[in-house]
Length: 278
Image 1 (cartoon, helix red, strand yellow):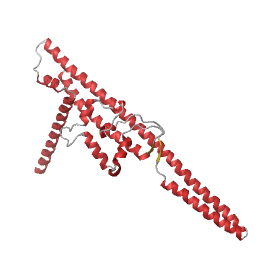
Image 2 (cartoon, one colour; image 1 turned 180 degrees about the horizontal axis):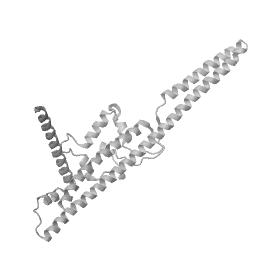
Image 3 (cartoon, helix red, strand yellow; image 1 turned 135 degrees about the vertical axis):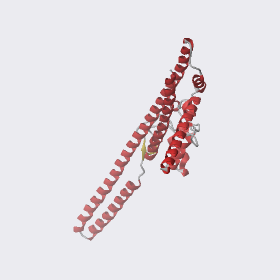
């Protein structure tokens, strides 16, 4: 029985800590949106006693709700842009991968054809005189060498190719202090939310993402600068690039999109509070 009570107390303390952290994050988001003074006035205001006071109270609440609605539209638009670049990167990866597999298949087929043709010719010369036999042996050796070379090319050929489409945005750039295109800039308040350590967190969302990508090997330590440059640049169709860079770019954009989605949870909490004030 004592153990059950201890477990219940622990669960209750964890739940209260999570609730306190959620409320602190909601207050922090309100501050980032420059809504905290208005929210404090609404929360601390005494119940209205006259029609004019009621109208004033409703107007104050409506102004906050409109600001929250605009913030939600910003978040939705940012997620849509992230998803668009994510899908472009994924489609480009799949097309480069498909071309690579087709190229490898062609080299393997060429190796088989050369090997088979040289074997047929070499076998046919066995019925001739000694000179013909020597020529046949030479053809067999040469054919085997060429077939082996083709097989090696197929084996070591890098999964790399020219981009089949253009990726015009670079929404990962701000996270690495690189210059974004005009269409790749985040709304100021979303960027402050990303770059500010939130209540209950050891570091900012931006830092958490970079640490996550580093631990997953997406930013190799010996080649981090070149990899970041490829991840953070708009890419044209003439650019040759490794397929795994495109794959990593798509996955990293998905991670950012997921974290932007968390903003909507905090906005919803503020939204519900304002609805209750009506």
